[in-house]
Length: 216
Image (cartoon, rainbow, N blue to C red; front, side, top):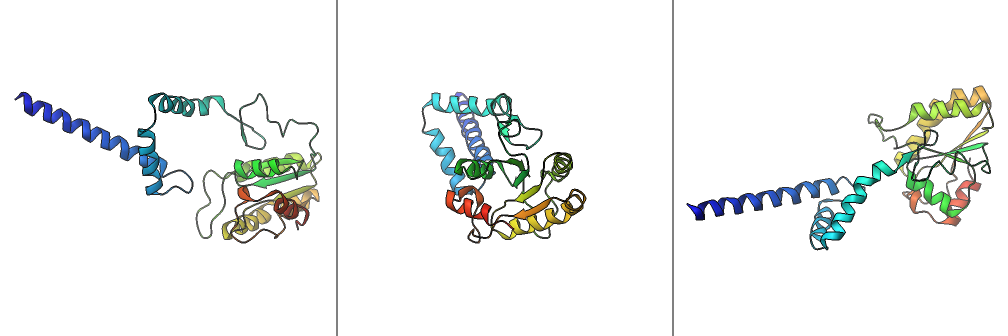
């Protein structure tokens, strides 16, 4: 009887362990660009790390939300006391550059080729599909409406050189057209010096500079 109980407990433990591995793998598969094989490698890599490393990683993940703020103007995430872009009096307020995600904005900022304002749209608009729920169209419209009554003179659409990126630009040009006409502001796209299929977050300084200078 005792042997059967031990065998049962052992099987339960293995089952729970396998279930945890499977669940964690499924979570990793939600990460951008991560497939089942890579997700599984992440799980087993973590299992081979020191307990303190895994513990610290878990604590950082828990703190990520509580320690991070989101700007109510540009919607970028930050950990400082205030948004260093929207609240910076030294930045040019006459332009807003609209990007898909924070990493696109960070890459442009790192290149040092732009000194105006940003807006993080949150997603792109794919062909023939429902507009993603997390895309900030209403917020963008409100931001443009508000800033156009002050210093805003130009909207720059900066998206990856993909079919989805082009589709997003066309859609934004269409819905923002009433504001563009109402306030006599310009709306331009990044210049097409970007190779087809290139992701904005990976472009180098010179490419970003040329795309910005040749916007139209």
